[in-house]
Amino acid sequence: MNQFVKTLQARPNTVILLIAVYFLINLIARVSLPNSLEMDEAGQILMSQWYALGYDTQPPFFNWVQHLVIDGIGQSLFALSLVKNLFLFSSYVFYYLAARQVLASKGLAVAAALGLLTIPEIGWLAQRDLTHSNASLFAACLFLFGLFRTLDRPTITSYLVTGIAIGIGLISKYNFSILCFCAFVALLASPAYRQRIFDWRILVTAAVALLIVAPHGLWLVQNFDIASRDTVTKLASGGQDGVLLQILRGLSQLPLTILAYGALTVLIFASVARGGFWPALRAGNPRTRLVEVMLAVLLVFLLFLIFFMGTAELKTRWVSPVLFILPLYICMKLDAYGIDDSDFLKRFIPVILLLMVLIPASLVLRIVAAGAINDHPKLTVPYQQLVEDIVRKPAITPALVIAGDAFLAGNIRMQLADTPVDTETYPLYSPPFDWSASKPILLVWRANDDDGAKVPPEVENRLKLHIGTLPLLQPQTIALPYIYGSDGDLFRLGYAWVIKP
Image (cartoon, rainbow, N blue to C red; front, side):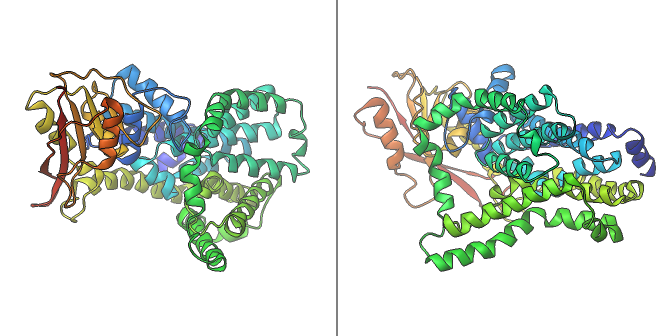
C-alpha cells in the first residue's frame, strides 16, 4: 500500500489510470447483470428511436450521445454502460485537472478527484441509475477546469473551454444554471478575480455557450409546458399545506438535504486529516474565498426557493450543481493550511480503495441477493423471458408495440431492437410502422392489480390515435418469476394483439 501511495505522489497522473480501471470494473459489473433496465436506462433506449431537439423534462445532450453510440455499436447493455462510465471517467479526470490548477500539493489533487467517490449521489447513485446528471457532472467538472485556469492564466482557450462547458451543462440539466449563477456572483464579489468577468474574451465564452444551447433553446421556448412540467411540480411540492408550515418544512429539510449529500465526505476527510482538519478550515486564500462565496450564494438561492417559491421538499438536485465542489474545497483548505499530503494520502487511499470495491459489489449484490431479502429491484423483472413467451415462441413479428408507460416501453424496446415502440408518455413522437395481417400491433401493460386483464385507457387512447376505430380486443395476462426472486414471487404483464382485418 505504501508503495502505491508513493507512486501516486511521484507520478500523480497515475490516478487517471486508477480511475479508468475502476470504471472498467463498473462497466463489467453492469454487463454481467440481467438485461432488464433501470428507469433512466429504459428512457435512453426508448428515446434512441429518434433524434430531437428536445424530448421531455430533461435536456437532450445525454440522449444525443447515447443515440450516437447505439447507432455506432448497436443497442446493448454494453452501449448503455459505456456511455455512462465514459461520462463519469471524464468527470473525474477534469475534476483532477481542475484541482491541479488550484492546489500546490499534487497529492491533494489526487485526493480531491478520488474524493468524488465519497459523495453518495456521485459515487453510488450515478452508477446505479443516473444519465442526465452524469452528463451535467462532466460539464461541471469541465467548467471548474476552465474557470480555475482562467482565474490565474486567462487565454482564449480557457475562455473557450469554459463556454463549451456552460453550453454542454445547460443542455444536460437545467439546474446547471445554478452553478453558473453562483460562480458569476462569486467572481463579481471577488476583488482578485472580478476583472475576468470584464475581459473581452468573456464574449468568446458567451458566444460558444449560446451556439451550443441555441438549438435546444428554440425547442424549449416552443415546448416550455412539456419541459417544465416536472420541475414546476417538484418546486411546488407541499403547496397543499399552509404557507408557514410549508416554510418550516422547507427549513427543516435544508440541513438534512445538505447533510445527505456531503456528510460522508466531511466525515471521511475529517477522519483522515485528524487533528489538522479543524485548523485547516480557518486557513484560506482568494481561491477558497471564491468557493465559499459560491456556497453562500447557493444557500441564499435555496432559502429563496423555500420562502418565495413554496418549495417544502428540497432534493439533492438543488444542491448537487455546486456542492460537488466539496472534496476539492476541503483539499483547498488543507492545502492552504499546509498539511502533510504524504501522511494524508497514506490514510486516505485505503478508504478510497475500499469504496472502489464496495460500490460495484453492492450494485451486483442488490440484484443477485434480491430474493434473499425479499426485494424486487427493476433489474430482476424478467422482460427477456416475457418477450420470449409473448412474441418469439409464437413466432409473431409485431409491427408496433404500444406500452402502458415509458419504463415498460424502454424495456420492451431493449428486447425488440428492430420493432418501433410507442407510449403516451411522449406525445411528440409517433413512430412509423407497417401494420398488416401478418404483423399485428402488440399492446403491453403492467398487470399487477385486479384489473390486469383489462387494457388501460392510456394504451387504448394511443392505439386509437394510430389506427382510428378500436377493434374488439382480447387481453391476456402472463406471470413469470422474478430473476433471482423468491419462490412464488411473480411479475404479471397484460398484453393484447391487434390484428388488422
